[in-house]
Image (cartoon, rainbow, N blue to C red; front, side, top):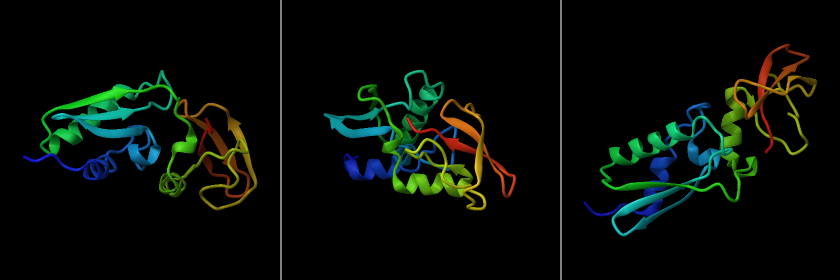
Length: 153
């Protein structure tokens, strides 16, 4: 089997969902930092959302599973924690997917600018802590729906 191009591998990785937010891919989340070949071994560099992320091992297993499914026999996951991941690395498509799923995407202003359900700007924080360490719990005062906000990091 000939080696697939790096571009093709990126497209495969673009189909691997984040285990905590399955609507967004690992590529859209921005944690896949590099893809390349080291002789016959495919090397994929991953930067976790934070160094203690409990999903890191699962993410690495899912990457390997996806790559092996395409017939690649040798893959190495390289974990890179510097520079640290930032929400700036989430792609524009990833931000759209989060919002369509009902999670307000990160905003440098420090909180969601509008409700992902109804679009109202009349929102309030319920708790700084959400269903995962990356999210906070917010509520819309107009439609009364709670929603997660992906914290800016």
